[in-house]
Length: 471
Image: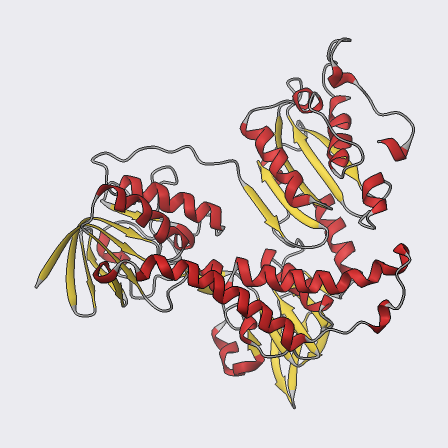
């Protein structure tokens, strides 16, 4: 028996739920299909449990600054790792429960099962053929694990399994130093695990600016060994694992694999849509409409391999949800790119990426935090922030940083870019003393010296004076 709907949504992650929110405003004739556990990747195994683990790690690590503040006996503090992991899961379960309330309230509008496309307006799930005027594909992604490595079983962890551990091993390798790998490597090290990290690329955390990348690597290497530029290989040994990358080797108890995520398209039937697929088996998707070609099929979230970030997935779900209920798809302007890596110091990137800019023509302003007043007071005086701007106009284009309060300063810069603000526009804003944001002002002042001067009566021309404590 065929069943017809206005919209079918495949996947109940962040993108799928965002799409659902818009679809429900226009029709009650919809169905949501999800394969595997309900509750979003972010809540179950991504953003939220990882940040809970990072907070525990950073709180314990803060004891390293106690002596500077006159707080004694820091060396006597201990960490109950099983209790810390239990707290991570407790918070995680609470976040997941919040997302589950949405799907549980759907009743017969929600189906558990693996969907397979049969064509642009048809799919099959659990032996049922369903038809729809529009289909939204938001089936998410899963961690990449090389097939030969699967034989290592429980000694191999991913973020899907890390937070389920009752305790942590003494020695761990982290393979893959993208944003998640870097976050977890530092957190595990700060929790007392003997960590060694391997990255095939010479850059880490998604950074493109060589100066920021070098600063980030130097700071992280003060906490745990990092080996870059060689592909890692694994071998089981008696009671452990051997990691080999070029001339570097490490013996560990288990390995956290952080090699990115793969779109969940296995047996999805994308080939039935009649459009060209790339090497990954994915169709081209218009990022401004989320539409595949001119079909009534939309793709949103991690599956489309655009930018696997929650706020981007939510936006894409929103766009897909709106357009799935329109006669003619609407064109959406996308937000200023913003990516944050929750290390210490924080790594962040916003606006046009460094490798997309013409290094011979753009202007660069830089601030380092070794001598910045508020950073010194807080024992956080390390890191670098770099801004990029157009010549002549001074319009801000982008930024990369590995700096204290990086997550907050990146938001300020993203707002400036979205509003097409110039260096002088930013310098007209107040910068309270003493704050970490004064470091951002230092980079802006460096840029200001490279663009045409503002008028004498313009406070944007208020320059630094020779007193580190006040700048």
